[in-house]
Image (cartoon, rainbow, N blue to C red; front, side, top):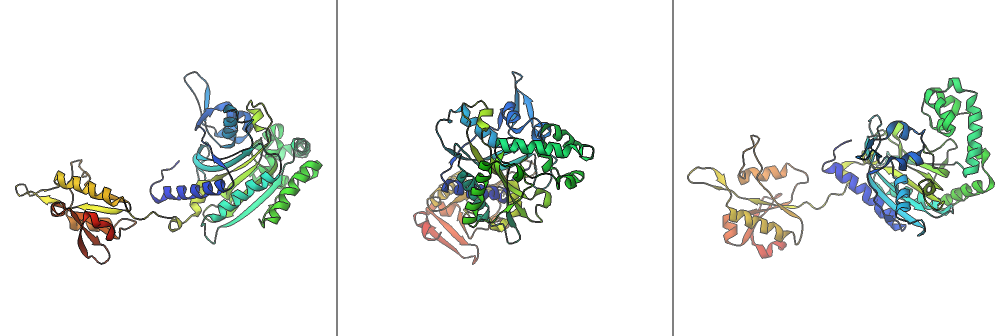
Length: 433
C-alpha cells in the first residue's frame, strides 16, 4: 500500500486513460463493482485450495457475522454483477473496470497488498474470435504506453482445453506427480490432492526440474478444443501479433479453460519474478458458479497498473498546461510594521483568477500557516516569485495584484523568463496570457 502524490498519481491516471480509450474503441462499456463483497463470491470461484483464498484474502465479519472480503481480483466481481443485475439475458456484455484490489502478500517492488488493476471482461460470446479480440486489446494498450526502448513486451499463450480435455489432463498430471510426491515442495504436495494443475505454476526450486518433464496439455486436447486454439493462433498471426506458445503456461485460478495468456516485460525495473504486466484467459461457466441461470462463456484479462507505472519515466507523462499563479502584493501596517492583505484586494484576486479561468487554468497564491501554527501573512513579492520558480512545473507568466491594480481594475503580468512586467486591464488580460 502506498500513497501517490503529484506525478506518481498522474502516471496511474495516464495509464488508465490509455487503457480506457483502447477498450472503448472495441465497444467496451465501464463497470464499477464494490471493493467489499461477500466472501463466497471469491471462495466459490477462485478455488478453496488457491493461494489467494488460502493465504491472501482480507476477510472480516460484518455486524450480522457474514464474512466479507476486500476484492482480490476483478473477474469474479464482474461475473457476480452480471448475475445480480440480471444481465445474463442481455448479451453479449463487454465491460472494462479499474480500481484497487487487495491481497495479503509479502510486499515487494511491483507487488503491493493494495494494488491497482485495469481489466476487461466479455461474456456471452463462445467463438474464439473474442479470445483474439481480448488479446488484441491488451496488446494494443500496452504498446501505446511509452515504456522505453529497454522494455521488451512478450506475449505468451497456451490452451488448457475445454472442461473434458482439462479433466483428462488433470488426471494425467496427478498420475505423473504422484511418482514424485515425496520430492515435491509442501505446497505442491497439497496441490497434488486438490488441483495438480497448480503445480505447473510452482516457483519452488525443488519442483522446477520435476515440472519440466510433466505431460503437456496439447496431448489431451479434444478436436474441438484444439480447433479453438488453432483459430486463436492463426488470427493473431494474420494480425502480425508476435506470440510464443508456452506449453507450461497455466493460470493460478480455478475458473480458467481454453486460451490463457500473459504479457511479460523484460526490465530491470521489475525483475524476473514480477515481469508479468498483463494476464488473462477464458472462463466459460463462471456465472453459473455464482448462482446464474445460464452457463455463459467468458474471457478477459487484468493488468497491474503499479508495475506499468514502474516502467514509465516521469518525463513521459503528459502534464497539463501550467496554471497561472495570481500573486497578491501585501501591504505594510504603518503602526505595527507587519504585513497584511486587505480583504478587498483578496476578493479582487479571486475575481482575477476566475476571469483568467475563462481562457486557461489559474490559482490564487494563498498565505499558509507558520510552523508554530500561527497565521501567516503573504510574503513580500520578491520572495513569492522565487518560490514559484522553485516548483515544477514552473509558470511562464505570473499575474500580480495589489491595491493599485485593484483601483485601476487591472493586473500586472510578469514574464518569468525576461522579467518584464506590463500592466493590463482585466478585460484585456487574455491578450497577454
